[in-house]
Length: 174
Image 1: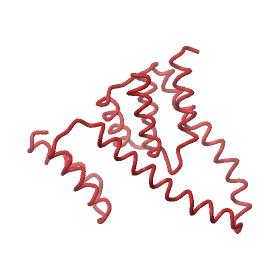
Image 2: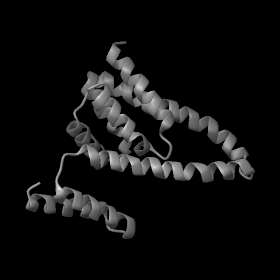
Image 3: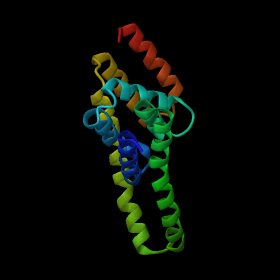
């Protein structure tokens, strides 16, 4: 296995085990590794891949396929996919067996209460990292803030917000 494939496997296997609350929680680490450490991507490429993975059907964590493909072609995509989803799937299977048996245990309620805010914090940090990595001006920051508020306090469709944001930024010139 080539060095790049080993690096992909190691990176995504490690991120897989840290993805509490979903793949969004590891986006800052994924971005740091792929952009700053390994230099596989530019900040703009990472953001573009993130946008593509969110717009495409399926889990947003499939950004790993795009990164793997960029680094080592189809083999890289396959390695990144298996490394990102394999370890966490195996762990979830094993933990679920214990979790089901401990449905009424005090430690389970305590652990759930402790992990929930951590998952929210990781997701929030992901959003901040993505926002900081983009090179945009006041109009884009305003669209980011407005869509965050709309998502938080309304039930507006993400597709509507995507369309409105695109129109606003096109009219504002970027």
